[in-house]
Picture (cartoon, rainbow, N blue to C red):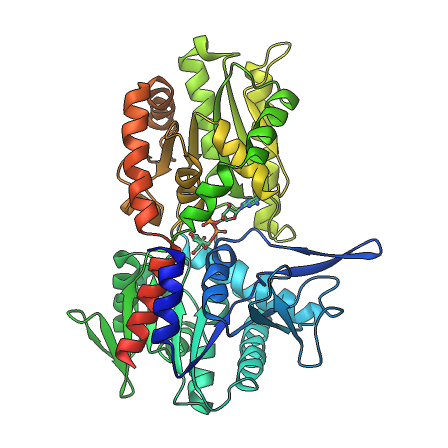
Length: 487
Ligand code: GDG
């Protein structure tokens, strides 16, 4: 679906509704840089995905104001028009104290719910104080929205696991609100979920939604099974819905995607070509077989597993020494949570060990760049690479896999993709791997490198057709269309 087509369609469908998007992370952050204010776009799948939809529809996006200059850029209603270069919608900021942010965001959202929903063998931490802050912040965000609701019927599109309680709070005050929530991470099976001490409150909160979306059918089924186990509710598996206290919540899957055309066009720019040359010179990459990976530094992304596979690959195929470089881009994330410190240490340790083991005087196999790199440089890395590795141990969707495909304008790259990502359900022409199985993973790296150019091109062309067609506009259109249909 083309952006323009989507804009026309959705404007028409949303007549009579006032659209609100709600997420923890802002789509635009204002920061002080010495005596100048600069605006950045953060590295998060969901903000990158939803900004194009808001640009198309207008309305208000409500999010936590986290930038050092955020307070200096809002009006009296805590709002600023964005995008800065071409304002098209309101960003309303909610302010949190350090304690609130610590308890709600780092604590309950990311030390309890994140590991609870991802089966990556990191234990969730359930602290009563974090839970209290989570409840409080859900109320704060609900207030911020309720202040904005006017006479038009509100359509509130809630993002993610930070706001499981919010739909019920809104519904108590505004029963006419149409609430839709998209859960960007997996939903685990009932056995995994049952350990949460506040499981009933979370489920009741989510059942305040008219429509609840997940990336894949499997997560919908897990959610319905969990509700069936924990609450006196009536699940209807045929219609994929749940009736609880007389109200119906529809549960549907909507695989999220990217703005294919925007990435495709950006990658064709001369700046990206120039950046490719600059990076190849800087890191001595001419004449090398190049692998690339882009991840937030998170224990669910399977980064040490990639390094282990490279170690195996070089042990088994020493003829590739000096001819091959794997570049891992890692944007720092949630750094002061202990499990994240641990994964960062583990990554450093394994890069050091594997590079030491295989290195020669002028060559090391892994180039690890721990930084948030500019978008165009990321495209340049994609463009120059022979293959990309996405090795998540568990991932709702994974947008990097789709971005890589969109950036491969010459169809000259292979995608190696973990079977445990939502993306693997759609991207059949990728080489699918189990990241835990280092030997199989190493074999797959070899297969990617040795694949004939014809086969590389055949696979990538098919992948590009899939992602071009199933893009972010189709995703947004499908969710909003469904919401309006059931309202
Ligand atoms: C969650 C779910 C789901 C990363 N490093 C840099 C950078 N990035 C960008 C990527 C991509 C995004 O961040 C990461 O998105 P993912 O989808 O891969 O992963 P999560 O952040 O875990 O997202 C996930 C997603 O929500 C959407 O529903 O797919 O399953 O976990 O867009 O490009 N961007 C730049 N520099 C970096 O260094 N510019």
